[in-house]
Image 1 (spheres, rainbow, N blue to C red):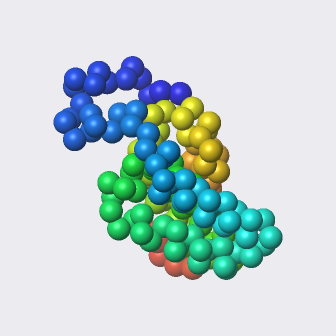
Image 2 (cartoon, rainbow, N blue to C red):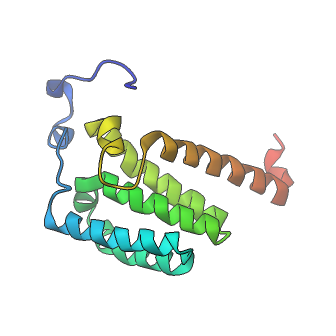
Length: 157
């Protein structure tokens, strides 16, 4: 659900106008990315979490070098980062999982603002907006609890 009425395009800063509704996920590089992500999903489903995480890093590295490329199909990047977090969960790496979820939120939020929740939920990418955001909240809550157990002084005012 939207936070309020959409801002008229004429009132947006010039740098954002070019991104409203822009969908470049059909470009060849994103089609190849989707194929690679499909292979990673197969590894994940086969419980090969370490190799899946390595493949995700290889898949994301060239895209992350150029933010304009990464944000040209932000839902794809968000889905790969969310899957990275799930791999980290299975590998008992909760701090890294939380960081991947935070990164996923950045990319997911961009497409949420520029294209909407339905765009994300109906995309071919393995991600759902609300489920991803709830995962971030759970992960950060767990991380904060873990910090308090390991370093009780963090809870002292």
